[in-house]
Length: 442
Image (cartoon, helix red, strand yellow):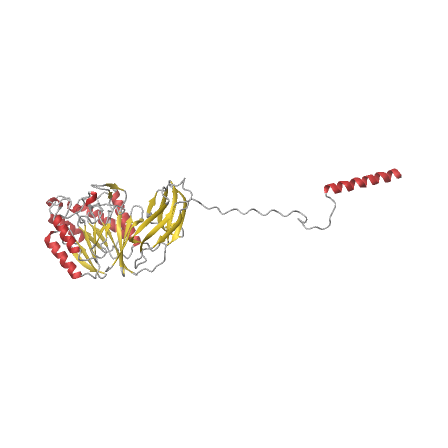
């Protein structure tokens, strides 16, 4: 009996020791986690600053009585620029570059500070709410920074029209000039369905042949069907490359365009529109240039006098005047101006009296980002605009060289200013550096 009690006591002792070691003895109804050490709170992760964005980005508007043009963009280099190769400046909204606009400009990353002067006559698109500066490593976007544009009032738009030139259609539908023409008219129809008119400033055809005129109107019908807008045609030097006499060429021009002569005028939306053109064919000694003649210049002077200096006046001529727009600038040895010295001097003398006049010219094909595609009179002279070319583009000094693209102009008339907007038809973008604004009755 004693032996049994002893063994029982030993067994109970063993159980107590085992329970104590294993923590199996109940400590009552503890809530889960009681007496456990508190969990360590997660460490706060520092906000990572991306050192590849530019610093100190500002935009200041010039001190002019308008909210639609010009200003200065300034910034300093990114904190980290070892991997950066380029900064690009763009119009923006919601911290992204505006879709459908080219970049304003770009810079390499060697400098510490940057200043980009947007000329006072550069139109700020209505869609633009910011200036964006993007940082790139080659083609890779690394980071960007944005600054808000100051808000301002804009005038009421009264009407709009388009100016294109130098389509050079040759009757071959597989030629790139045909697809450029289709793109140009398609975008005009989409962007400006209520256009007041489209002005075709010469060299619509490559040689003035019937098949080329037929192709031009085939393009227009393909895009517009039976609802063709008001179209105004001017004669260029290529409309007289078919070896016929001037009279024969004008008969063909009249058959397709309805114009009985190379120059005419009309009024629309309270403005005066004047079309000018050569009275001689290329084969009659003027070559690629034109001859307006004393009779047409007298007529022009009379038309301008009737219009006066308060009414908007828009003029159109295929060949430009010397030292007005790109392709005609003497110090770049460019020689694509279109009048002889005597007629050039008289034209400049006449137009100088009408700072409310704007002359659109084609012929040079120089693209709209080349040097001086526009010459603004600033209230002391007329305004001059290069229309570039729908068919193919040109660039450079001297005789120049080929440049990719297809371009033209959209003109918007407001209460107190006029906007001229360069368009790249090949990519379907507005050319940001070729958006102009100038004010009436300066």
